[in-house]
Image 1 (cartoon, one colour):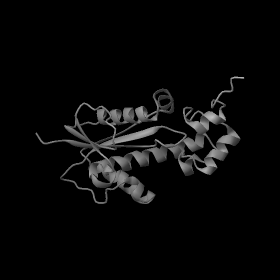
Image 2: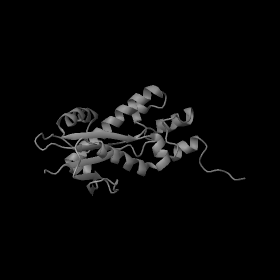
Image 3: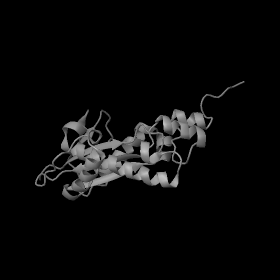
Image 4: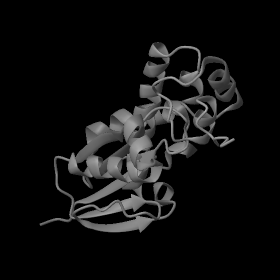
Length: 195
């Protein structure tokens, strides 16, 4: 039996709004993909092009997420690991091994190797990084339509000065992570004065 190696990565740990998204990809050695790299090192246009190529050429792929509610309930790290487990579980081919970007073991039911900076050195992790980033960016652009005024299509939920100003002006939307300090502050959930 040939080894089935899944690359696993997530995006969206830092934003104040929206889900955290993970992807798992098993590449097909007979259908190599040129240009796989850390999604952050690629232009948006290149990521978009590779998104379709990866989905067409990979042996298996899955994109999964953990919701804002899950992030607030579990914490961002645990929600990220949950999204990774969902992505690997959703693969049509069961991997014999997973290469996971970062230094935290998501608790997969296969052999796991943690690779710090893996999205830049392991093609399967790079592919997962691209799928997760494009999927999350597209979701945030759609969510911007439903929650106008925050500029989500531009900053994708990250705490830019424009986003922080909109948060102060408009208050928190249902998309905002209530466990994150800037959102807590707007909601008056920061430090409580006991006197």
